[in-house]
Structure formats: C-alpha cells, structure tokens
Image (cartoon, rainbow, N blue to C red; front, side, top):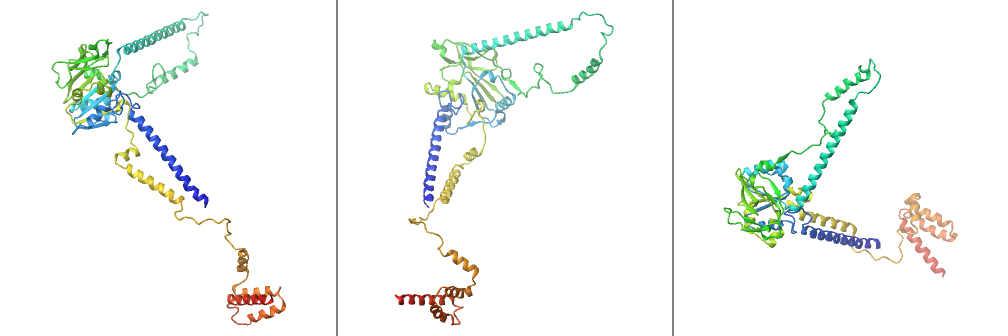
Length: 453
C-alpha cells in the first residue's frame, strides 16, 4: 500500500516537470520566432529590421482590406480575381530567368487586372563589381582550360595519325579479322537509340526546369553602379514629374541597383537616383507591373526611421485584396494534422483530449477511497487449520464427519469418556445434525474439565 501511495506523488512530479519543459520550450520558440530572424530577409513573417512584417500588420489594421500570406507555388496562383501581388526581396539576377510556369501564372494574373509589384533585394555596387570580376576570372580560366584540352587532344590525334616506319608488308592494308568483327559491332552501338547524354561527362542529363527570360518578355534590364554615399543627393531618390501626387518628393535609398533607361520604352519612370531609374511601372493587359530596385524602402527599419505612407499606398494600389507571396523566399505550406486543427479551430479539442488522458492515467494509478491503516504486522490470509480443513473436505463426506471425529477421539481418550460421549450418538438425529451434536460434545467436555479443578 505504501508503494501505491508513493506512485501518484511521483506521477504528479513527472507531469509537473513535463509541463515546465513544454512551457520553457514554448517560451523559447516564441522569443525566437518573435524576433523573426529565422525567416528569410524581406519576408512578411520577419519582425527584425530586415523584414517587412510592419507593412503587413499595418495593412491588416485597415478596414475593408484583406491581407494574406500565400505559401503556395506561384504557378498555383489563380488569375482571378484582380488583386495586388507583392513579391518582395527577389534577387534581380535570379528573377531575370524565373521558372516558366511561375511566370505564366504571374502574367495571367496581371493580364486579368492584378497589380504585380516586384521589389528587388538591395545590392551593393562595390560588392557587385567584385563578384562580377570574380565570375569573369572564373569564365576566363574555364576558357583557358578548354583551349589547353583541345591542344592536347590535337597533338594526341596528330601523333596517332603518323605512319610507323616498318618493313613493307603486303597484308598491312588488309583489315584483321578481329577488326572486321569489331566494326559492325561499333556501328551497331552508335546507331542504337538511347537517351541523350552529356558530351563532356557521358552521363544522362538531369531533369531541368524550363526558365523564362523575364527581362526580354517585360522589356527591361538591370545593372549596378557605385554611388558616392558621402553626398546626400546620392542617398535619396527623387520623384519624376507627372507621377501621382500621393508619392513623396524624396525618399532615402540604399540599393545600388537601377534599370537601364534605354530599354524602358514601354515603362513609366516613377523615381530616379542621380538620373538612373529605380522605380518603374507599365500596363500589362488589364493590370499593371511595378518594378522597384530596393526592398529596403519597405523594410521595418525604413518604416521606423522614415515612414512614407503615400509610398506604401501607391505600391499596394486600389485593390482591396493584397497577397504577400512568400514562396519566393523558399517558404512552403506543408499541411498536417496541426495545421488543419488550427485552421478549423480544433486546438481546444486537442487540449480536452489531453486533459481526459491525464485524468484516465490518474484514475488508474490513484485510489480515490483512502486505504486502511496498515498494522505493524502483516496478517496471514488463511488460518493455521486451513490445510486440515481442506484435507477433511476432500476425504470425509459431510454425513460421516461426526463419526470420524468420534473414532479419532476414542483412540486417545479414556474408556470412561468414550462411554459417556457414546450417549450423544444414540440419538437418531445426531448424524443428520453434526454441528449441533458437536457443540453439545464440546460443552460436555468443558464441564468435565472444569469440575476436575
């Protein structure tokens, strides 16, 4: 019983430690996720200076505006209804050649009346020049290696084609039987249909993704230049004449990326930085396309230091439905039991089931009725004569039990006691009432023993 009393205490202690562990992990993850640095830069889930969560939450507070994070593939975006699609933090180099299926979905949405806003990640001109120089050096090294390989192959082919100096042999030009047999086999191998192979490695090429040249399709091109940030004019952009008055005249700017003006015949330039276009817009079907060269202009840090509500309102446009496309950052929706439970409000049911399971374990492990106090000594479950009683029940029939007791007593008792007790067995009902007769005999023997003393 003492073990049963200790078990609930241990169980409660373990449950308390488990709950403390869960609470600690929840607090740790909430602190980690609230900072937001676990998410990619310029994600609407990121709350640090390099995120855009402040923009997302500001739009959520506006009445009549529906804001949504879309974690699906871009190719799964429906064309209708018209809305604003925000793609923030896209690298300009990768966006120039994007998967064709995603581009088709974006073009379809724009032609149906949506406003597609692509905001490129900021780029440093000095860093871009360094990377471009390193890439150019790698390309030159690859070309030099190819030229050296070709020269080596050419020398090897020339040395093999030179005839060997030997005595003339009339059968020298005749092909050997082995060569004659090998030639048809080689021809057969060459004509055998097979999957195309890489000419350099001889292996089958991996499945490739069809890419789309967006710069050629949309008619733009990007480049970087080094701006002297010591000059105040180089740290800001200016609004072009004829653009909406809701836009601010000047804004601080970070990225060294810009769009080449000579290719922007169909585009309207909205902002320039020292003469270089950095924000452009054009019509595309029933909708519009907007390209912005600096995602830092919508970041949490920018909104804290230099908020520009007119700039953000112009980017989102007149649509009442705004979608932040998070798939471009590598974030994907993986539906599971937990996500379905959150979607349909079943979190409370989960905690109810958890409580029911805890109560079941408690009920199985705990005695609700207080146990009896334990004696100092453990009592036996059977009497000392239990073995004899069991033996008698098996060997002596109930009708002969009194006669068996008489015979056993007669073997050890005196002759006078035997004669006196025989009077009890003369009664005809003695055999049918063994218990009553046995009690009479016991009382008679007790009187006899008392009278002797």
